[in-house]
Length: 248
Image (cartoon, rainbow, N blue to C red):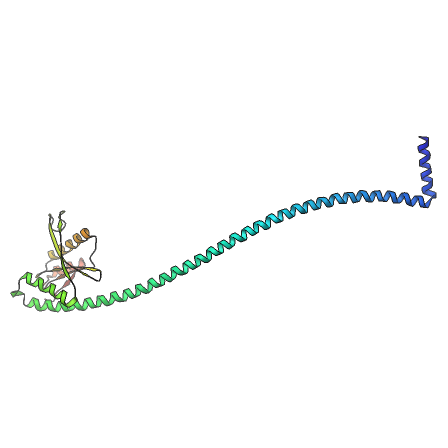
């Protein structure tokens, strides 16, 4: 203890009296502090580097996810471009269909005009035939009208016959027959009679319904050709959408 106290007094004296010793001690004390602070800075710097490395890792993950999103967005854009192409093709086909429908509508109008002109000609012939009805049999009249339809309009008139087991037409099972004209895919049912009554109109409508049920094909037009039609027959034909051709 005495030696230690003496050493302390000596060091204090030297610090007071010996300038060089004082600076040497001060330098040693300061260096130690610097080393301590440097060590602390190194530790903190290492922590910063570790956190930066962690951030770099997270940034790398983020950029990797961005790259994946970019790839998916590009796939979506490619699919949208493909859809745009398909929509363009669809609209192009719609435009083509519209053009064809327009052409078909023009053809249908023209065909109807031609048919109406032909039926008007047939009506004129019916008038002439009706004037001579008194010397003609009904079968001869019917065959004459068929001949006019084939000659003047170019129609092929065929007899359609089937058995009505349910009695739809005559209210009891029986054979049913009617003349059928098929022209340009259109089905025309034709009935020829010397004298059209209201009951004839109802019978023709029943035959048309029976024909549709049996064949699955609805007629485009239903015609009744006669040299004479009663007023009630004309009214019934209008109600049931049956075309009546007569001038007598």
